Image 1: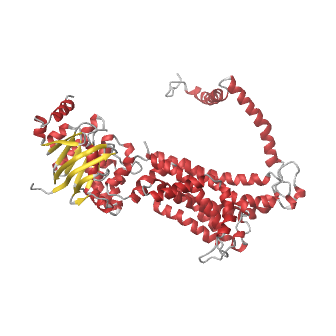
Image 2: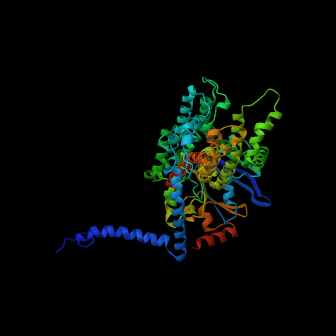
Length: 247
Length: 368
């Protein structure tokens, strides 16, 4: 591969008690790639993406993010988290802070940036996600789509090398999905390394470089979209696609 | 033709109609709220009857027939309140036996303590400064009232009355909250030994009456300390008040921490924030907001609990008032003292409650 590898998973395993949540996951993501992880619910997609910034701890194997290996070392984990931005299904904005304060949170408290400078960075990104006029509102006063756009801006303030999206549109009303996808599209176009767990197959078709199909904790198939959607390698992927594309 | 106003009714009819309307409104309100059913009507009548017999007597006893001025017991009217001793001893109730030449220190202590109130209400001053002030207040009060630093030392027995109540109440309130936050976090930590210590401490302390701790602090502790070492009784009492009430607050806060969605912590962690900063800026602000009603009740309870130190011979306001009524001249006046003390505590605690109500309104404004 000509491009630098920024995410490297090597035989990753994870158990919840006796339940084998992730089985021997191998995956390498190059800088600038957009990866879509899909699969039926309970297949381990979210667990996998949450292991990448150590919100969940894997039990076996190695995960390397931007040349830092995930270990027990708290400093390393905090470093990895600074290299990755995460967008959650339920936005997880801080309800007691204004939109602007949400976006300057990491800059102020993690990077120790002075408030005025942090505000500048945050305003710039809020304008990018087209929500600059709402900076003094509280998250509770915004629609779901707006909140998710703020959440994306908040993650971007830390200038991450990799963006992780954990079902970013699943909690949204249908009419708000497009405004969030639009932001994700432009990020992808700008060359951001993105790993997205999503059911938005339209987005996957158009923007994913590769699609990772998971079932029962294993990666079953990794293919570029043109291959995955036209003739999936496995029967299970075919069944999944039939179900999800049926409506 | 008559001029018409916007409702289409003749203007002349407007004046009487307006007053008629308000009377109707009152009648309607009374009907709906006081005489809605025969059961409601009976209750209403009973209450009116009760108030009609009790209230005039009470007001008469308290004010109209009461004696407000005079030289001694002889001037008191026999069947009404006698406020003469209250007026006579009011300085003692406020300052206790504090040396007169140093009373400006008490006044400044009241001033710096009460200054915290507007500070808590304003939103203009950065939170860090307000929190800093609140945490610094105990030191300030200790130095002003007890001495140390550049101030002359005051003996513990010279602290009494409102001064002592205020001293104990404010210091205990200011310091018990931070202690309780640490206890609540300790009870939830993943570090087993720390967690066991916190759980054990909380369970032990909340199952034993405060008053026994006060007794132990005053009497039993001396037995364990090496000879010659003695800790000031004020310090011991404060220690008990702080570390006992912190236990109840810790449980209130622990409940509120658990109510903060896990996603909040994850969002903070995902940005590279560590445990302490996540707790300080994400979890605690939300948990404390959610526990305002319960915490305010606890603060009020703690403030009133300061009266318990009376059993150790410390004359806080209740004890000071009681002492003056043990004076031979005023012996036998039972009601006046408690009424005055109640009035004081009501004003103080109601102010705390109002602060709680204000906080809740302020919090509601950020939610939708």
